[in-house]
Length: 431
Image (cartoon, rainbow, N blue to C red; front, side):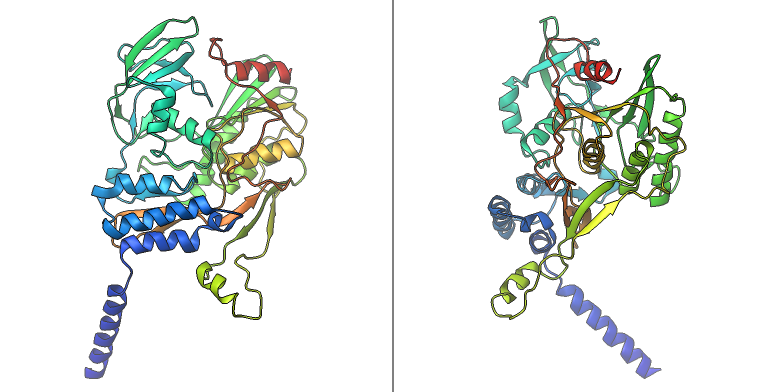
């Protein structure tokens, strides 16, 4: 008994020692970025490295806590990667506020705002000022409020914080309607209702044109009514996709709207692509950063006679045709709409449809972000950091990160026309 007791005591002391030797949260954050962040080791990333040095200097003098969080987040966002995000693990702190602003999908133009004071009737409104600042000046002032991989992606994300954000900051907008009328309105924030997500929806535009809105590729029910799992998230998406496309007819022309899609799961990407492609198609060319400390590998290369590659082998993913929707549309004519609002795995759908020449892709360039993000907990804090662990190419060899998918035909929203002119163009092209 004494022997067993001594053994337990030694194990406890060893565990205590290991725990006490864990690096400070400030060190952990910097270490994870330096050793697990794949995009840091692609081409010349001096800008990203300089930001990480700036972050390390700041954390030498400041604790990683709620008080300093705003400054820490701003520094992390300066890395310029839409996937590099700090998360608060305390669910009760993750409140999302909604202003009631509705945007024309994928654009910076407001469609309406019933909750604003005064309310904005349905039209197309161009934002000219935010809190008395010209829009350009406000964007510059707020530019590190959000994470982004490209200037156009950051611009789009910042504009959309006027619709939903993590605080209920007082904001007054000066807008101009399509007829030229100037209006001032205040955003009235309220806690966003916790309802099951609408990931896919469909609408018939006319007798032979059907529009599929694919707004989310991660269909997690966050209401708390059912325990979620990866299988359930995928099942939710499949059901919504199948239900939304059930009424599509054999001779229908199809418009796919990806302009509000922030990404999600690869299985969901495959499911969408298999609805429109009879053969297996290319999804990803990728390779992972090895888990061995890249800094040590770099140092060892100077003294070790064998090459020590930082990267695992190149891998290629193609769609599995067994993962197929209830209805398929191999012969229907398709036009796909994209914008900077299409991010991460959404961009894979756009790229595959374009490069397979299965769909004409119109609109504006996608955000430009990819790399199998993984969430790393920061021990000793309430926070985790999400970072890409691999690099990813399109089939044509172009990086997703920082580049995105270019449309076959660029169509930009007009501030003058009242209608969604990208959609109107898509309807014309798909006929």
